[in-house]
Every structure is written in C-alpha cells, then in structure tokens.
Length: 465
Image (cartoon, rainbow, N blue to C red; front, side, top):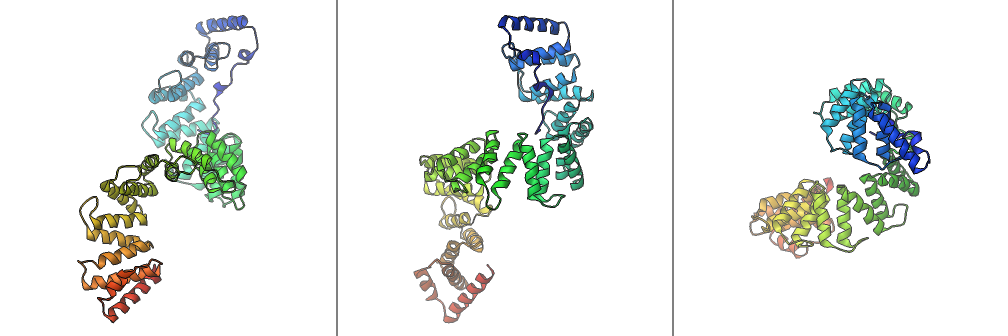
C-alpha cells in the first residue's frame, strides 16, 4: 500500500564502498562462502547484492534464490521479501498463492510487515480466498506491531464499512494514528475526510495540508487529489495544480493523465495545447481509462492535436463504449449509421443507440426512434419510436418533439393523434425549431377549437418541463 518502505531497500554500506574490482570480488567470494556456511545475515547481504547489482552483476533469479535460503532458515523478513517477489514476479514466476504461503509463515512469528501484507491479500482476495474478517484481523495485528500503513488501512475500512461497521469516529482515530506514525496512506485518507466532510467539518485547507504531507512522501493518490483540489479552487493556480497532476501522471495514474489532457484541451488557466492534450489522453487511454478513450476518439474525429482519422476515432469510441460510457455509445451509433470510419451497419447503429438511450442520452433516444420508425436495422416499430421520441422530448430535445408531431400525423394517425401532433409541433416551435409546412398541414385537418386546445396543451406541457 502507499508509503510502504520495506527493510530490504537499504543495502549494506560495505557494498557501496569504492574499491578495486579484484578486492570487491574477493569480498564477494568471502561473503558468499559465509552465506553458504549457513550465516543468515550473509545470505541476506548476498541476496541484496544480487538484487541491486552492488559488487556483482545484478541477477533477480539469484537474488530470489538467496532470499529463499534465508527464508527457509526462518528469517521472517526474508520470508516477507520472498512473498513480495512472488507477488511481483521478480526473479520468480508470479504466484500470489505462493506469496500468501510465505506471508503466513512470517506473520505467524509476529512480523508486522508480513501481517500487514497478509491482511491486504485477504481483503483483496489476492492469492487467497477473499475474507474481510481475516484481513482485518491481520491488519489489527500489524497495527499493534506499529505498522503505520496498517493503521491507515483500518481507517479506510471504517470509512467505507468494508468488513466492519462504518464509523467516522473510528476512521478518524485510525487515520490519525497512522499519520502520526508516518503513513502517507493515512495522511491522504485524512485529506479525503476533510475535503468531503466525512466525520469532520468540511475544510478544504485542512484537506490540502494533509494531501500535501502525503504527496511530499510521493504518495500517488495524494499527488492526484492535491492536483485536482488545487485545480478546482476559485482563481486556481493551474501551474501548481498541473505540477502535482504531472507527478501523479509520471507515477502512472491514468486519472491524472486524463486531467492534464482536459486542462490542456480546454485551456483552463494554461494555454491550449491540443497536441499535448492528445498525448496525455493517449497515455490514459492506453491504460484503459474510459473517459480518456472517449476524448481521444473525439480528437481523432476532429483532427485536433492529431491527424484526422475516423477509423481511429471509432476504435477509441468502441473501447469506451465497451466500458459503458454513454457518450461513446452514442458516437459509435452515429458512426455505424453514417458509415463514418467504419462500414455502415444499421443493426449495430440501432444496438449502440439503444445502449446510449437506456443510459439517458436524449440524442440517442431521438436517433433510435428514427431508426425504429423507418425500420432501419430491424423491423419497423412505430410504437417503440413514439416511446423513445417521447422520452427524448421529456428531456428537452426539440427534434424529438418535432418527430412526435410527424409520427402522430402520419397515415396511421387517429383524430386524437392529430391533435397531439399539433401539440408537439407547437412545443417544437416554442423551443426554437420551426415545424414549417407540417404545422399548417395538420392544423388544416383540425377545427378551430381543436387547434386552440392543442396550443393550450403545449403551453401547459412547457410550463412543467
């Protein structure tokens, strides 16, 4: 988790001495002989040397082998290290279950870091069957052994109610304990609580302070949240906000990459730069960030910041639509209906319009109604078309109101339909869309009383929509 700095990052200082190559080799041989004789401390130093390349060529597999020797000799720190190597696939084949087996051995000895990592494994179901109760038990053990990030994680669990009864008081208590002991994870969580007013009075200054403390420890989540908080301030200093977002982006956070793209595309406090915006969108999109996929597709469609490429636009719209982004579903429907960047396919257009329509997009609702009424991409469905036109009109789409008038005045229309058609034509007209001759044609078939009733109905509808 955030802020975790295991003991093995510190390499024995003797390995850092600047000495002639032959003397370094002599020392290395002597150290290896000592390790081979069963000296655990020597085993660890040999493992560290192979891992870092200090005094000998780096060799992850050989480092893992020596860490295993120390682990099998009963050293809990080495057992924890071996577990992490299996989690990351460094020097060994990635194997979360084997990692959990080593963590269990180390945790059973009371080794705090192993208890913390084992708790996280159970909470995530990573290498073990997910078990919130067991995860929390090990986090508590680790917290009692002074592992600050265990305290911070307990704070988050109480905040979210995962495996425990949600409690702002307990969330605050554990987060403060973790922060006191130097956990960036806990500091970031405190920032979130103050920013949102969760269990504390909402205080953006306090949130900023906590985010800064965590961000100064290179906590990626805090870097992102601090950048976003600064960007959302009135009269925001976008240069500083972008600096923190860039730090988070450089650490691989796709939300920060997307945010930088948005700032540069919109020119929010910084000069517009479509090329850089497309670059940041591209980085986030390659990580599967749906909103970035949508925006990158739009840039390819318009040719802003990249060479115009309708096929590439469709590719990115497809990625975002597959993740349920409504605007991307709508854009994909348009592409299939018009054959823009992909072969025209009314069946797929109808499918994607339906997805977006069910997601509340009024343009998609109107377009779906059009395909249903025209029988494009499937059977003609007048009633279905009316339903979707009505839904879009209720959401304020004047084109849907006009389409309702057109359908309700067709050859299948009853007398009451024609009165309703005149009502919808008037609604469209009141919203700035001229029905043209269609209005005159329908009113010619109505009595003066029916025409006045249609107008009153339209004004009554508009008064509540």
